[in-house]
Image 1 (cartoon, one colour):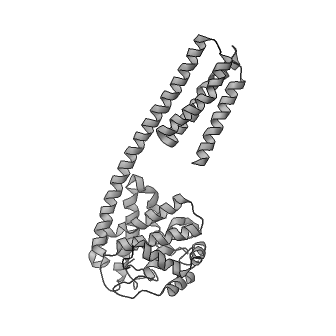
Image 2 (spheres, rainbow, N blue to C red):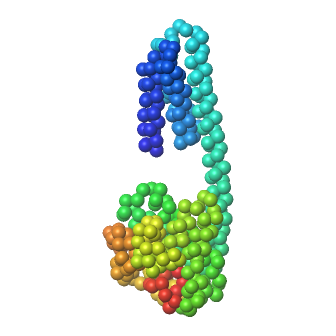
Length: 328
């Protein structure tokens, strides 16, 4: 926001300054003088687009303050020209108001569509949680873990919000996995494991079909890729895996290892941390592992507790992507 405000101030001052300095006498310089006067609309329109109606009107007020002294000095006592200049100011304010109103209306429409899409996906996730009985709490904890790792890596607020959104949606593809596999209490066969692995690609396809969530589709699709290229579904390697997916992979596995499942007990926190460390350069990005290790173990436990508001934990994750481990 600050950068945009600085751009608006710079553009307004530059245009107003040139307008002041270029003489308004007849000739080609007069054409430049008139052009600069028209270009004063630029910061007003930009402000309305970036900040809505209020921003557009504030910019119009600021430009009017820059413009008025020029009118009073250069065109003092010239009634006809003063009326012309007043018309320019009316145009300025009108465009600020119309642009701000239209942009605000468009944003509300986009927001409503986005909310409708998110509501649909939330319904899918709720249906999945009813089937699997651990999806929601798993998402809450993984979201908290991924965000903490992202903070340790110095990610911007927008990137941290992306991690939170991915946490909520990352398992949406499991809606297409049959109950006999998804809810199987024991180990999966090779064919069952292959079917389970399809959930990452399916989740990416579901999000890609939702305009407001397309930006998350590649991350959800890639959250089971391994740093050494042996993950799924596309066998991506190293930096080709989106950074949020690399962060999320560590958080997802860590929660899986420290959560209970019907077929095994959770690992102690220090053992789960040791596993993450051992898998650096193989399953996980070493930079993400380093950031993960900077966080004290006690803090992970506290994050888990707060993420689910004191409710008992549940989810899990296999230690290797093989048919003898289970349901991720």
